[in-house]
Image (spheres, helix red, strand yellow):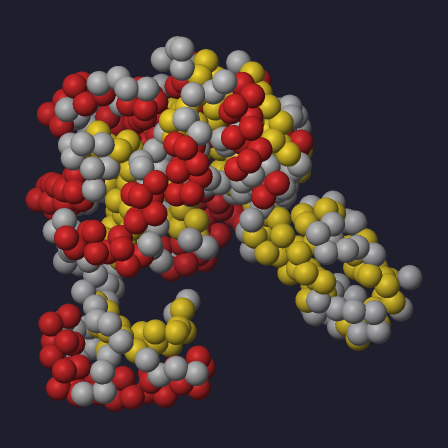
Length: 70
Length: 459
């Protein structure tokens, strides 16, 4: 199972992709808020979104899995 | 007996608490869940939890902060900077609850927080504002006359634009009409409104500000100026006092209009008037007034020897600060430079880099000052802004102060997180910075050289 993980600690501000969406390298899949900045999470993989593993408002650590791709 | 509650966290909370202690005030800290073990909590006589990590539910929660004040019997509240510092509603609530808000009156905070009102107050006090027009009428003769009074080069700006979009530089009167037509067309397509206005163009802009202190009765003094031109993403990075390269006439004029503005609104306490400074002509124009203690206040303290926070607190408890802080007693000595250390990674487009500080060695020595709210073991969380400390150096000359600051940043060791310290050293060592050729686009214009210098330092 391919996963997209959080590049840093922060709060999930906005989930851009939904299950079933196609994702390619560099696509913004989610926006985090960290230290008063908005940080785009870019896909480092390609595939179809199988499952979103976090919710908006959730606090995540670096390397927390955010999205499962199939 | 006065008791001070500090409604803030991090380095500024520590800074305020230490001045409060030095003048004998009892102190109260507030903290969010994630800050329960933070140094500012340990520095205060007592502390109250105000909520969970998120600022909206803790440091910005007015009810929770006022409840902490009631609970501890606090008589004063110092807001620091950020959070509730420029919230007129909060200042007014403090007053209604019988607490002294350490800052100007709520009306002043509200007026200076409104761009139009602030500009009107500045104009009325004789402070130059950037020459410009309201939305232009269609009549060409009126427009040409307005442009002539602003002078060329000028900028045509879309009223609905922003961030450089819908902005056009016009060098000569002949190019004006075509420029306006083109900007109107672009603005209509991009923003749905073709309204444009004109503004003076400043080719080499610097950000220079004047520190003032008002006594609430129309009397005010200034504590000279600072340059804060080096910014990224509207975040200041390097500041210094005094602003280098200002002519004495300009410096005196800028200080005088600042005192006039503070006096005209019977300003109460410490404040800063920010100017856009035209490095080609020596002209300066009002940007805004910050009605709080600034992050960079320490540079002014180093060159004047005045403890600005203690002055705020003593004025707030009714001591006669005006009697000793008279204009002819305020002098400046030497030069001070400050670098802001951020938990961010210059190599990854300055991405935030929260984490745990596993080891910390602070620089010291003559003329070196560090303001921080961190210690070894501190967790730098993603919930608040990324500044973890300010390192300042003071010396007889600007060159020596820069050397001293570069040295201090070299001695500073922060283990466990990525910071911008190496990048700061490269910026400070850049020939254009050394030469005092400052401008608000400095960090963008010299980005490549700064990166190369940093690579050389690391090697």
